[in-house]
Length: 64
Image 1 (cartoon, one colour):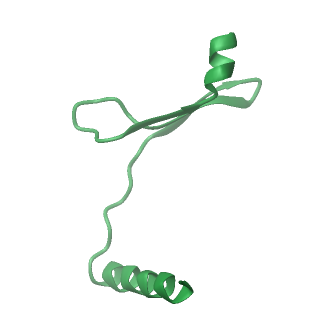
Image 2 (cartoon, helix red, strand yellow):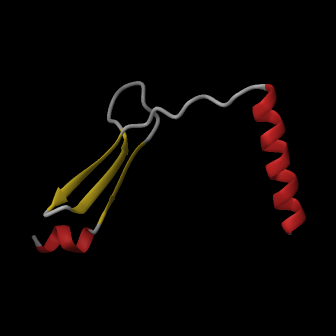
């Protein structure tokens, strides 16, 4: 299995040298309380975005 991962990594490196990957311009933000992140967001809501990810503690949200 290690050989498979190594060959895949080598393939990615070679492809990146030939044609660089697009830059990831995703927006990262958080909602914090006392410098402790309550919610993390990646991406943005909008017409031309493909991903908007929200990571949060649902139980903590329901108890508040």
